[in-house]
Image 1: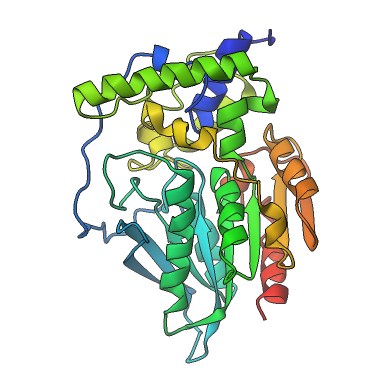
Image 2: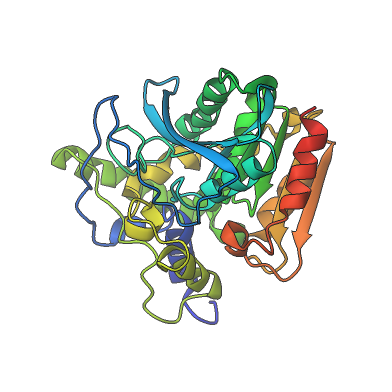
Length: 361
């Protein structure tokens, strides 16, 4: 038992807070599936609707590109205004899991563009302004491909030196970023900030607390949910995310403080702000451990960044232990998990900029 919730409730509620795809979820009442965005032509919002101010040091463009599965992705491209005609190093930025490019990834991208990098923040397949049906589905394979498709796009840009491309992954997209870089040798360096290993938390729960019997039960429940979805003709959804009822662990309060606050990180297109994933999204993560090939990133460098007080800190620590050199783990004193989403005094942009400046020469 935990001090606030029963063990079963804690695991279920915790996973709902970040990715919400694992233990016991089919037992909750499902929502109606959101309206799908079909076709390859996207209707992109043109006004500035980010959760952070627009920089006067950066040129911004809305762009689209297709991944290897034919899904059209929407992205924000940030370029330094003083770039001239030179070809620059470029960064692809994704995350957090259940967020959109108007939130944390866009903030990271714009800030890095201020520091001289071309940077691209994108919406993953099936989410935000990107295409793909049904909506609000996650996939370790397709989402890994999303990163490589973004590398395809940015590497062909006239302002980019395709031999100097790096990746930043935030929260759940930190783990997916590491998986993408392990397989995509075009990427020369990677940063994972406040990283989650989504396959680990979905299959094993927080702190690997799920027993084999609980895992089997979850797979049975999710398998039965597939019958319900097939009979209905559309996927059932988890409950709305980050709706607090009282008594939640502090990290769930932190998630709600970021995603639900219009003064901080709320965005109407973000799953974590205004929706939820499909109940069965977690199935594909259960047997697809994202860290299996992390050693294959070497000899390309890895920088892992995590908050000292983050409940998720162990994900970066075990990833660091599993990775080969060169690697570095930076722990930010006093920082929580969500502090590294948007707190400019805690996100170590000097460290990140120096890391890519050194390794994307």
